[in-house]
Length: 275
Image (cartoon, rainbow, N blue to C red; front, side, top):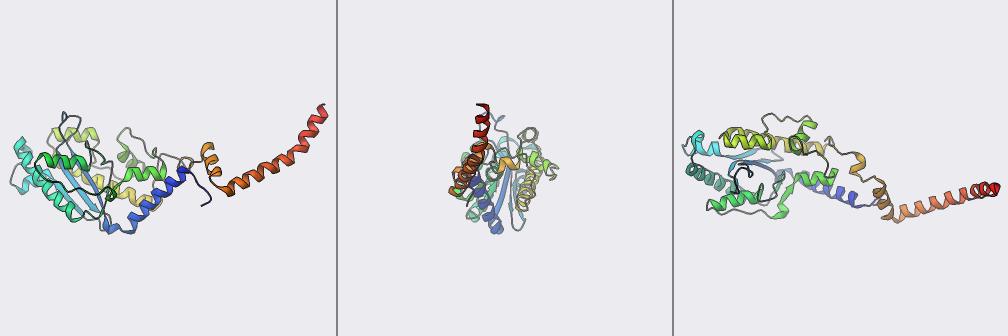
C-alpha cells in the first residue's frame, strides 16, 4: 500500500471488521436494551426493562421484556411492586441467558454497551444480584458499532447533542425514529412504569442500528465529518503519509530537487541584478 498513516490504517481496520460481519450475516446478532436510569437509581445496578436481539441476516427479532414476562406469569405489569419486579426480571434474564448460551459463538453488534453502567456487564451484574448465573460472551464476540464507525469516519462522525449520536445519526440519514426515546425520556418512562413504551423504543433502536449498518455497506451513510477528516488529509496527515512511503518520499524529493534546479537561475539572476 503506497499511502500509509495511522488514520488510513484505522480506516482500513474498520472496513475489515465491517466486511467480516457482512460476509456472515446469519451469524451476526444486533442487541440493544433499555433499563432504569443509572443516574436516578442512586448507585444501584439499574433494573432491566427490555432486551431485543435481531439476526442481521434473517431480520428475525427475539425480545425479552418486563411487560411480556409479567403477562406470562399472570401479574399486572401496571402495578408491580419491588418483589414482583425482582421475580419477573429474574425470569426475563434467565430466558435471556439461555438464549446467549445458545448463540455465544455469534458476533454481537451493540451500541455503546461497554461498562457496568450500561452494557453487557451491567446486565450480568443485575442477574447476579437476583441470584442468577450469567453467561459471559468472549470479548472478540462483541462489536461496538460506534467504535467501528469511528474507525471508518473518525470519532466525530456524529454529534452527541441534542438526542445522542444514535438518534442524531438516524435523523441525519432520514431513518425513522418514531417511538425511539432519548435517555431522559427513557428515565421518565421507567419512573412512570411505562414498560411497553420502553420496549417499543428498544425495538426502534434495533431498526436504526440495522439501517445504519446497511447504509454503511452501500456507502450511503451521511455523517458529520468530511472526506478530509476521514482520510487524514490535513497538512500533518499528508506529511505522515509521505514519510511512511519510500516511493512518495522519493517523488517528493525529486519534485523539490527539480523545483530547486529550476528556480536557482532565476534567483541568481534576480539577486545578481539587485547587486
